[in-house]
Length: 338
Image 1: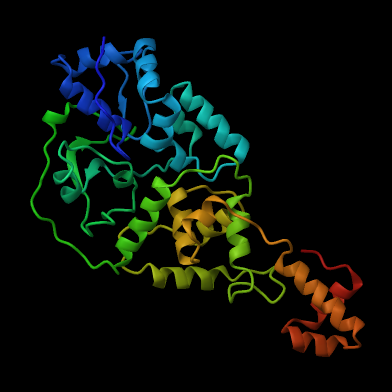
Image 2 (image 1 turned 60 degrees about the vertical axis):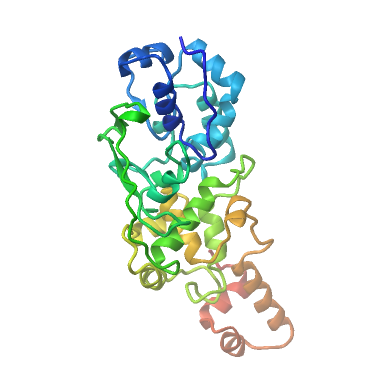
């Protein structure tokens, strides 16, 4: 049984902590170490979330760190549940605190992954005891936002089920050679910095505004929507995003993905963050979204009716608002359907 627990570092993956714990323990094989901490010694170690610890280990971890704190600050459960409804997000958190198995099936966890556990060679060299952080494990955010270098792969390969062969810290090879750095203005650094900020931020478990609805509100009154705000020019939006993200090594957004995110039908967190960054949305605003009191279409309809009551005819209103005369007529008849 494990009786000693080292400190856990800021933003350290729970997996990384277990790797260090193994190195500090008297156990000489991973199987005997896992047998001492897990409900089932055959359980594969999960490098992004958590494992089903046995009762003694769970109590020890809870007493020293708090299980809820470990889940929120040392796993990627908060990241991959960030844009779920308030009810679903809190249910996922409860499951995680209870250390229920297969939590990834409840999350917006992408099928693609980094392939290896990753680290920044400069961060890890200056940390004293090496450890792995959460921010380095997000597919697409491939550069350290502080040292402007690409993350390196440790000799910890992630299989197709997203599990790894568990190793003690002293069995892991680190390359501390000076890496090639890129400009702070490079799009890869901007994306990694934005994602890192979101990973590190305190998640909002009371947010209940659908992310697609919030992003849609952010493209209102732009060139990407019609005068009334109902029709969206996704081709133009996608084209501008493609130009903005030129040079980004991992970019998968297409028209179908974009449309489904805006309709609240697709929850790829990385894609959502790319859209938000393009639209200039700050992390805090993304975590605490507020919808406008009235939509663009509601304000447009009010303006049309106001102009009509002021004595303006349909043709002039259409010219004034840059809209089709038939649209104006339908608004005045109260028959326009969104």
